Image (cartoon, rainbow, N blue to C red):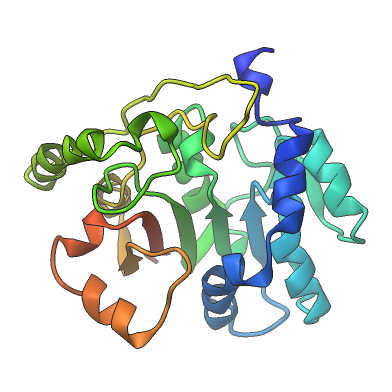
Length: 251
């Protein structure tokens, strides 16, 4: 099995996505709807999987929703749901013109891409000035909770993330380090993750790219008052299991 094809045409991975419920995407959907001022504004879901988020928006009569995907298997699954404006792309330049979308989002995609900087830069390019980019992914520098990357899941290994966090906090630059691809018969979530994704690097990337950080969270699903209170404490949000960030493209 070629590493570069490990995730893209994986039927078992698609089956897992198809079984995922609304709650998994509830926070993502909440902010998509909040940032789209009307149901006619344009939204792009980059790496839409089986099209679950697009299907929910379509059922709620959002009419200008787009999706692009590197997997022909996932693309076909989404098309069977009756979704339109779906595009296959090679994972490099997004097939859209500059300043086109009001909101661009990606849900657990950044950890899988070959070049995270190119991936995020392309999302900024196709976003209108004053528009928003939403990025959701695991935080592989988390040391409190279990991680979806099994080679790093043991507690003593996660403790090694503590000095990495402080090193990144005191560095001006951002660096998306690479991780080892896992190819096993018993496929588990994020075996095909290749980037040491974390909230610190993502924040710094957008700040270096002339964007504002509108919202930054360590939780991809929870969105209640207690969660927001905890993650408002400086540094604490960098230790949680996920990255949930909204950036605004400057005019």
